[in-house]
Image 1 (cartoon, rainbow, N blue to C red):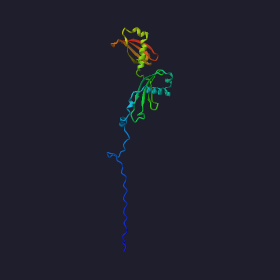
Image 2 (tube, rainbow, N blue to C red):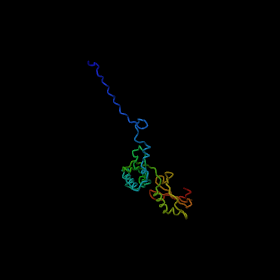
Image 3 (tube, one colour):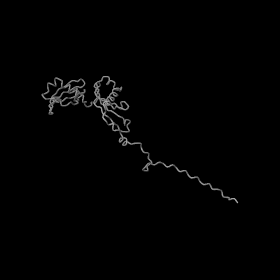
Image 4 (cartoon, helix red, strand yellow):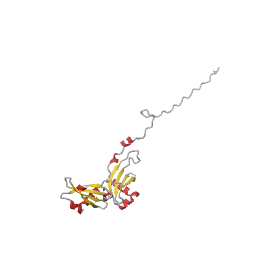
Length: 218
């Protein structure tokens, strides 16, 4: 006699869910690709190297070709005061780029040009034009001394043994002073022991001595 029991269907084994990949430490939080510390730690040390003569020339050419400075480049009466490497941190878009900071004084327009040049892209990344006057460059200091040395009024007041001690950036004290509105230098003359005797004010726009005063009255 056949059995009346029906065959029992066995249940299908449940599909196991794929295991999520958990990073070491047990946190399921997604790790950031990199943070600021990591970016700074892995920054290229060469970005901090002094600018080479070729890089300075490239930076100045890029700057003078900018249409905003076309008048300065056309007249050509400007002097580069400072050229130095510039490094910015992440997440700034220029992080990792070779940058140059160029500060120049535009004599024709009586203004200071402060620019950041992206040497990798060959563009002016930042440009600031102000009436503020930067410190004198070495070339300007030497020029001021040479102008003062050949001025007859200065030579008449120099004592035996007086030499040019220093050249300082000079800004006039009031609107009546010509140096108040024009880029000027004060050349201090005196003995080698440090005692000053004569001060000559040199107008760097016209390359001439405008005042000669005793050091004690300056």
